[in-house]
Figure 1 (cartoon, rainbow, N blue to C red):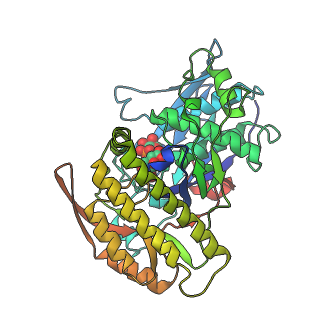
Figure 2 (figure 1 turned 30 degrees about the vertical axis):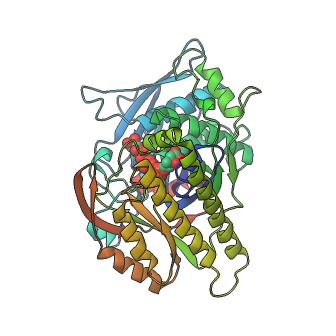
Length: 461
Ligand SMILES: Nc1ncnc2c1ncn2[C@@H]1O[C@H](COP(=O)(O)OP(=O)(O)OP(=O)(O)O)[C@@H](O)[C@H]1O
Ligand SMILES: C[C@@](O)(CCOP(=O)(O)O)CC(=O)O
């Protein structure tokens, strides 16, 4: 049997600071920051134990309850790729499945078996998420005890309160990268090269879209692979017409999608050099606990744009100008600091973006920056060290992002404001209330990266 050495890979979370909704259209770009909250995946040979069948991959996420998923895999006929099936399931299959893990396994194993015919040996996979992906109990959040490296939440994943940092995109990316690194020789796929990263990106986007059941802009997977960047999306048709794992020709199709055949070419753009944060500033993410995201926001905004293209396109154009201006001014301030008021243009762009987002909210009827978030952002802006803030991504009641001077005084003032804040809002006629907490995350430039597997020893089976 081929013996593979254990591998570990991590991928960052994300925040779409500017370009929500616009980035769905290839005409516009999104300013996306990778965050230093990472999703870690470790792959190792399966420990021998009774009952392990030949082709078995066991995945576990030890921070959560009932988070062990066992899969069998087999190469299918008619070039259908590798079929991955959950084992030992019973009546509660629905409760205990993990679509993102299962789909990523099917896509990555199918891609690999369509190429150099590597031996897919049984493996044990462990997923570990940095604590900020989920709201932690208050003793962790207020810093009264030293948080463990990986907090054990003790609930099923479905019950954990997500903070919106893109856990599924980071998971799919880190899992895909870990599987490729574990099973393929370095001369077939090397993630430290541009080509290796591009193949990872294409495969992770395909798996993430399939697991989500929709083709989004893909900014979250792009930043999980490449880190902070200015992102222009891919043409969606590249992922809307292929077979599913197990169906005829999936093997050839997924290989063409990942390696890019003559007919299949990706046209996304990743501009890493366009994104900088001046030394002395940092991004802060504030989680609105008990907030919730109104479903269908994207659908409703796009429906409004379709119905009133003239009205929407004026706002889209102005927003794009300020989104790009924000990225440009941050870069200028990072590269050539220019005295005390060096951030005044950055602040102006933040204010214009917020005002345009509120117009978008009014006209589309979608609470992208709802009044409660307006109050919170206005209060943050009054703190002297705050350069600006926005509702990131799709907006709504989930979170706000603030760019602030990275000094203890400014951060303490922001933390004080947030810890005393009581959030009251209404979603679809339902009253919600909650607290706001400052997450420990900040921007990070680096995307996916290899880690040392032995570091995770105490959390492995
Ligand atoms: N630590 C984990 N272990 C195993 N699976 C996980 C883990 N974190 C996330 N997942 C998978 O990702 C799913 C959550 O994906 P979803 O897209 O709803 O959240 P998200 O990516 O964090 O959201 P958002 O895009 O709003 O930031 C979970 O249901 C699970 O399948
Ligand atoms: C609204 C949208 O542009 C951003 C959604 O961002 P988030 O999931 O709220 O971080 C959708 C997308 O880009 O796929």
